[in-house]
Amino acid sequence: MKLINQLCTGLFIVALSGGYFAVATEQPVNTEIVKKTNIQNLVEHSNHVYSAAQPSAEQIKLLSLAGVKHVINLRSPSEQTWDEGELVRSLGMSYHALPIAGAKDVTVENARNLTNLLNEFEGESILVHCASSNRVGALIAISAHEQGLDVEAALDKGKRWGMKSLEPVVREVVNDK
Image (cartoon, rainbow, N blue to C red):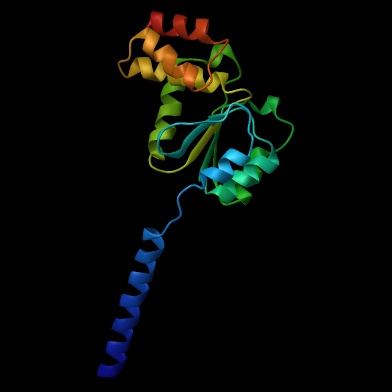
């Protein structure tokens, strides 16, 4: 009986250390594969957070191979002709839809919603996208202003994330606070 207890204890310790080993050796994002996706307007920010325009199904498959864990889609369902969420989940990635249908949805509340999602997965690889990255940058600019950046610095940050034509909308939102 003592031998069986020792054997079970040993197997338990091996199982625990094996689990620890799997966590400790988790592979980082393969940035070379990410670069080869050629997704329009793809920009890497800190800690493997990427902003981009709409990726194709093949580009999402490459992101999965590269080790990206999460996809946040800001496009409204009416803008898409295929089920991105189904594909993303089938590849073992998590999918989050935060529909921003246009300028009317560029709000402080939606900026906070995006920030909350980004914070929830902090330290993990994330792609956040819309059609061109304009909406992504707009929400990031509003969030940056909410976090204390002055208007111009917040707008600059939004531009780095892809904001273009929504700059006047963002100015109006941050000035109305």
